Length: 295
Image 1: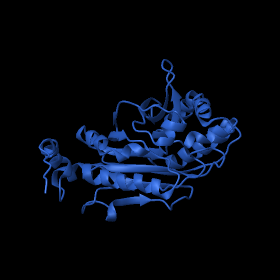
Image 2: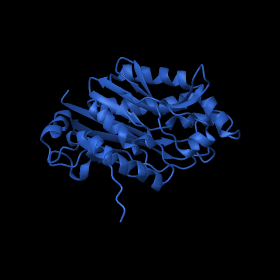
Image 3: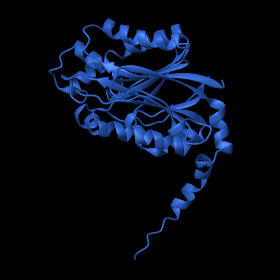
Image 4: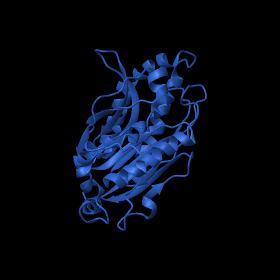
C-alpha cells in the first residue's frame, strides 16, 4: 500500500460499572475510525485500567492489577472481533497479563490484524511505579510485525526513551513506530513526546503516539492523566511542517486522523537532505574507539 490512514486516540478513562460499558466506549471509537476509512487505530497504554473500577479499589494496587489481568481473555476476544468486523488493524493499547507458568505479571500490548489474529509486544522497560508498586515484570524481546501496511514496531511509553529499540526496528525495515502511552503529568508526557520526535528524525520512520486522558482518582498511578495524541514525521521537505502531521488538543477526549505516504518515507531513506538511518552504520565502530581525554 502506498497511502494509509491512521487514527490515534486521546482516550478518556472513566469509571465503569460493567464490562459492557467499557465495550460500548471501545466499539464506538473503532466504528468512528472505520467510518473515516482508517487502516489502523491506536489505543493508549493502560486504557484498560477503567476495568479496575469493576472491583474493590481499596485493596493493594498489585492485587488489583492481577484482578485486571483476569479480564485479558475477554479483552482479546473483544478486540479481535472489532478488528475482524471493521477490517482494520488495531493496536489495542495494553492490559496486564499473568504468565501461566511463572505467574509473573507483564504489561502486554497487542496488534490485531483485519483477520482477527493478533501479535503480542510486552513492555520492555518499566517505570518505577510499575516495578515497585504494581510488581510488573519486564518483557525480553522486541518484535517487528510484518503487515500489509508495512513493517511496524510497538514501543510502549517508557520504551521510546531507549533509542536502541527504534534503531533496531528501523534496520529491520520498520517504517511505523507505534507508541501507546499513559502519563500522569506534563513532564512525563513531554519525555515521551520529545523522544518520539527524536526517534522519527533519527530513523526516518513515522511515529504514532496515543495517550490516556481523564482520571480515575481512586486508582494509584492513574489518578491523573496528561496526554496528547500525535502523528509525527521526519523533518525534511517532503514531510509536514515541524514534523507534525496531526496532534490533538491536550487532555481532551478526541481522535486524530492522518494520512501517511509510505513511498515518501522509503524515498527519504535514499534521497533525504540527510540520511541518519544509513549513516548510523558507522556509529558502533566510532563508539568502540571512544577515548577519554584528560585536560
